Length: 410
Image (cartoon, rainbow, N blue to C red; front, side):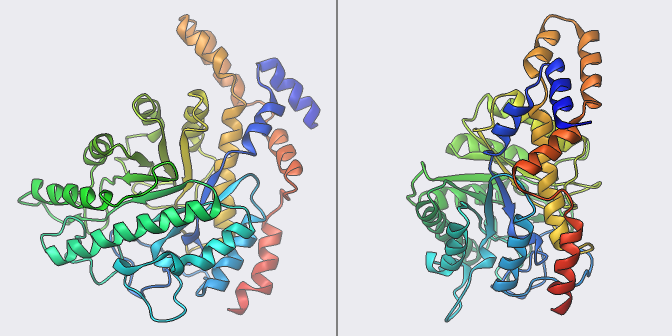
């Protein structure tokens, strides 16, 4: 089937492929840098901690700034659409004496800013509250040790200053996401006090002045992590309540909930009460396993909810996964392309027509229409979108060539 035939087939279903592709190319997706080096970063050689694991030993991992940037460039060249760069503070670059995370300054990220500006990308940012000696007994901002709490509070404040620097330099808003790994392996005797300390710490971080029109602070919850199975300080209830009270943006990571919960169902509820929300799109396999995102049911449903609720400009979309068992460039490309595919799939849904069927009680017709859309000629539209973006549909051969010429020689 040709693209013209696919276009006409979608028109018969009430969807405009041309309009869908035009919208898609301007939706920014924030691409996480940490897929390229298994979340190692540059500021610490501590083993991953905080319930995080990168499994596998596929060769070619980036170990320097130059390698990571080159790998990111290769992946980005194979991904259509508008992209942002998403950094953790552990990717600070020190030309001289290293600084602690509580002493980080904008100049420690100047090379990343230069990299992003040369590629017309904005930058999103994440304080790194894990894999560090100052994580004491699996606690950071909720620690009963005042020196530990103070260290991480100063880290949060430093990150606000850096996030504002990113926004000013790139001309694009910076989403600064706070997530902490704090919790207990076994049942705690006191659930209240750690959360009270976390609340006080967040209050102190947010007392730092910053430009709220440029920097969007988000708060991310988690249900549990490895070694933190019984209690997580930053639960969903805590993070949603705090975000509402503090006037910041809630962030949903679809790997951070009970396996029977779906983030797609939460989006419409949060959009009713928040001007903006943020998403980390991943693929949990039984738990927060951070598998490479695929074009699967939940990814499609998440994107449908963004589009159905006319919230393309109200939802910050980012990817968050890491796999060390496969080629890391291919992992980047597969995952981000899957998000782009799901957005296009959602944009090709005649949502107004389907909503009318639902609201008028014509549920049999709704079911039939939804089933018909599943076999619509989506592949031809996706191929046309790639062609217009000058992106090759075949990325594996390009990745294999890069592996032979670059990755295999590291």
